[in-house]
Amino acid sequence: MTQRKEFTLRSYNPSDAGAVVQVVNAASAQTIGVQQATVDRVGNVRLARYVPVTSEKVVALNPQNEIVGYAYLVNAERHIVYGVGGAVRPDYWGKGVGTMLLDWAEQNALRLSNYAPAGVKTVLQANLYEIEHEAIALFTQRGYTKVREWLHLVIELETSPVLPSLRDGLYLREMDLDNDWDIVGPAMDEAFADHWGLIQLPEAETLELEEAEPIVNMAEDESYSNAPGFCFIMMDKDTVVGGVFCNNKLVESHNTGRVGSLFVRPYYRRQGVGRALMLTAFYNFWKHGIRRIILDTDAESFSKTPIFYASLGMNPYRHEFLFEKVIRSGREVRRLTL
Image (cartoon, rainbow, N blue to C red):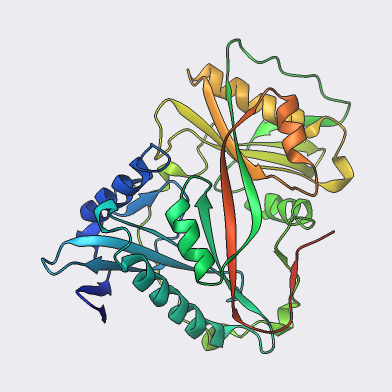
């Protein structure tokens, strides 16, 4: 337990879910104007941005023992990159709660750095919307630097999308979300190998499992994840060419679909594969009565995805920044430029 002035930090308990959702949504109502949290069907806090249920979480309490702040810490990418997020109740902005939560996150990121390969730089990241001025000021003061911009795009379908014809040998099929990952995983790895932030680290440099923190299995509501009937893969005979994964249940809005991920293997790019996958996604949203579709993409994508999405009729509606702070100095093992 950590204490600072009149506020106290303690570990998050499942019974805190309702109060945490109120804090997160009160804060988001003051900034982007939509809810960013809900209690899912298994009782977990579900945020608009996916956060693994096994992530470390804390709440900040006022002297009346009310929850006025919340933070989580995601440990990802082989203990090299961590993510922090959360919220402070608006009537407690500027009172040190956010600073206390960031202290907690940075201290624990430093602890987790002990599990990273020796000599490798570790960083703590945070995603902040352009309109979150107070939060951006706090992170900047604490030494975080803006390293990337995410563009949020939307399209309102007015007519049924027309599916394009495919060249000989290519065909589309619905993905089997239980059994196709063995063939889809390698295709995704190859497609995302040129993305910003990819970890380039030989397996030999990763700690053995017994040296790392134990893996904890927890119940998770997958209804907000890749939705059956909304995920498709493009095949060239037995080879996965690309795919598109979509969600039809969102935290922040109803009657809206989301394209969560689109990938195309490099060899098959500039051949209409991505367009066919996106139009297939649009068509299936339309077929299920969903007219508004959103996605987010790297505004400076190496593969020029903003131009591609604009060609499909998608328009920007929100900007989000990725901020980053070095936790432990060392060798950079991520791909950050072409």
